Image 1 (cartoon, one colour):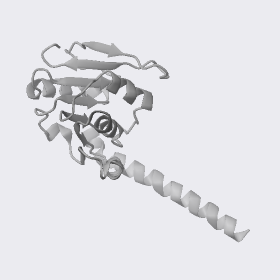
Image 2 (image 1 turned 120 degrees about the vertical axis):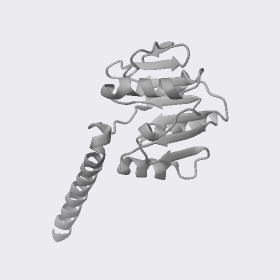
Image 3 (image 1 turned 90 degrees about the horizontal axis):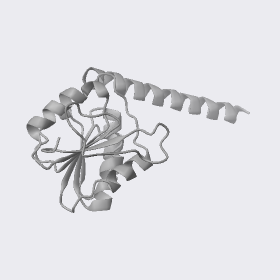
Length: 185
């Protein structure tokens, strides 16, 4: 009987510590993220995005707010592209970094993507909150080369015209994925 009480205590304590760690990691970066939290991209969404985004080995893909890094890991494995993810949440960065260890062509940076020049990207992927999309659109207009492809999940880049919009099958809310090409927006 005593052993089961200790087990329950340690499970509850572990879960409580995990919740506190997640909460703290969100609070620490909230002035920059404006309250945005990690929301994992569903497998069907990642697969659909990559199915509609053919890339060639050696191209360079950036994922803004990469979370656990699943998009860059899949893109690197599928196409042989070089990928870099930017994640400012220290907990999510740590998870992405650990899951990406030893993956060829995949790097993750714990830094604020607003301070990074995106000009070398061939492809840029984002799944960000709508309140920052106007500011992001301006940043990308000033930094990306003509022909650079941009993928945005759920939310449009204001002032940009998508070259294609896809709705992944099997998603709960039929949320769109927008595909853009700089110079065609």
